[in-house]
Image (cartoon, rainbow, N blue to C red; front, side, top):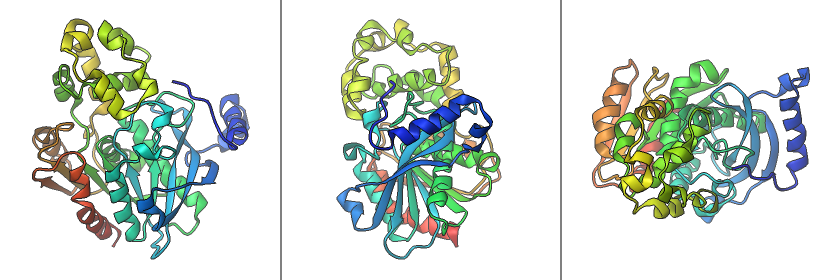
Length: 367
């Protein structure tokens, strides 16, 4: 998946990319958070009355420390600005360039719009990164937590370059894939965010404990997530060949990863048996271990208080995985954590039913 650069920013972006690849001293000036391109963006109707927006291309880093580019939105509230920043980490959209929410409103999910609207209403600038590989010249390292986290943190740096009035204080807020990235951001921040001041992390139904969950996915309606996860792992680990891990019926469906986004991918893989999905019908233990290494939050101490929200009727991220595994893992560290179960909530309603709760919690972190 190597989509072409499009639009009037292509020439400017190409010039910066040449610097990144040149190895010359000039490349040293290209630092995480540097804004490469910026253009006025059109927002969904639910948000257009609350904020103005710019779509940016900016510099971030990969898990190996290499300098890469990412895209996303910076939304500035029209009223009551407080000059503080909240990062919104979106849930899974897909793997292809077309699945970047900053340019495709059909994957700017309704729950994301509701969450962002609540943040803007408090006067907070919101950055909404697409994550590396969605909208850029690279594969999307889906569920590689450290990569998403760095793009989240660097989106705050980028926003401050666009708006000098923004303070160093920020909170990271995310859902599902974005909730996982938010937790990783809380772990990485002390060594990565520089002069920024992380005040808290809100994670709604975050992906976690891949070693417990991934082996149970084959044969279930959500196994399209696992296919995406294998290609996400391949994007950062050359020792992983995602295609070779799949059985022939699953291989025949691979074009959907480029032609569709989340729901098309889930539909394509929903009805396969484990033997039709994976070579041998199961994941090798070595692959499960690699998934755990890159996917599981909670392997390092969090650096800021955590708000953890989980719907009890979530089939994508099961309640027991969060309550029974992730909560004890995070509780083991010396950092305040509030765990809020949402009775009867599915992945989306866990977001929409708690927008006020999340905003109130963030306000206390900024107080």
